[in-house]
Length: 142
Length: 398
Image (tube, rainbow over all chains, first blue to last red; front, top):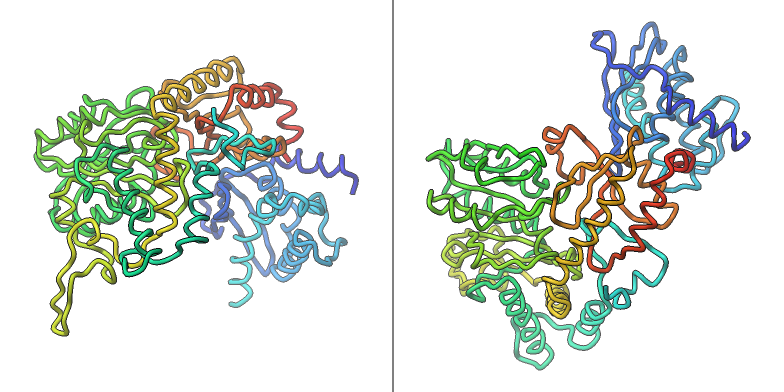
């Protein structure tokens, strides 16, 4: 992906994050995602119905990379089954860790394909996935 | 000032995170290396020459600390691992035994976690009550506001002399005088003050003072608990073990040593203590008053420059220490820190461990510049230049 396009994707998702809103709807599972080493702190609201991620929203304070990564994650994962979403997360983590990954499924998240070059930013990109993964794994074990 | 003394300043690094920790001058590093390379023995075992030298150097630091903060007695100086350990020991080793249910502990919302959480635990254990001094419009502590919340139940006032985000210098001397008239103990967190201003415990008349060596050109993992002798005598040691007992037999009877050894169980951080002594000598040579004056001038210069940038919001505009907390409108503090890092500028973004301060300032996270005497006007110019162009910050923040 072209460097300028990556930048545009990140900037757009940072300035106009997708589904950045709290919800009190009881159909959502709320989970917090934060990093020990930084100050990002977001709450995710996840709605799973009929083995499908119906909706995800988020709220909180986070840096540009974390906010953009959360926004992209939400766009990419709504409509997927929990199993598909876990596969997506796995590939995303492989990419951030500079390992072999399947780029065909990552969509806009490919904007972070060279985030490993900024070591102190890696945990920003993976932040939202920590909380979501917890919820999906619990769901899968049921 | 004195930049040539610091190996960390050899490269083109601009370090504005002195509130977190300070750089170490070569003399301190050499002093620690000398211990490990030429007399690396344990303390309190003067049977052979190198151990005798350890004792001399170790106790020499106690003398240096005593002079440095003008304590009246040597045994009032206890070596700890840092401010955190000191404050915890005071809360759980001293006050745990004398506070009663319903008693009040006074804090402020700008305290660092180390001067909040030990008191939360004490309050929870005993059923005591935490109360907060209302801060004024600049988020400062005033004696008037303290007086408003004192009751006959108030037993402890625990305050930083200088707080780590707002950076206000609290009127500790006046607070102690008032507190003592009302039979209230005063505990002072000196982590941000002792490295930067002259602190005289007899003049302040505080009951306890804690500070850390690593924020004052010394090594990490070592610090000081000062307490008035009769109060330290009443502390129940939280650590029992070697070095601090006089004798014990198989029927649980234990006789403890006198102060200060009684509160320093186990092999201490010998290299750290000796290094701290060297750091104190180093600071004395520069002069604490010179340090305070220079930092104040540097801060005024930074504030004057930042005030001219319309989108910079300074949180603590009126403080008289080297700490400046600010935000750039609509840019997350950590993104600003990442941006500056690209230009070799180190500053801290976040809540700075003062997690209830947001209730006072309405701001959760900030960028913090915390100055020390080795910072320069040129460094401030570089910082301000980089902050002057908001488009550049946005373009380069990731």
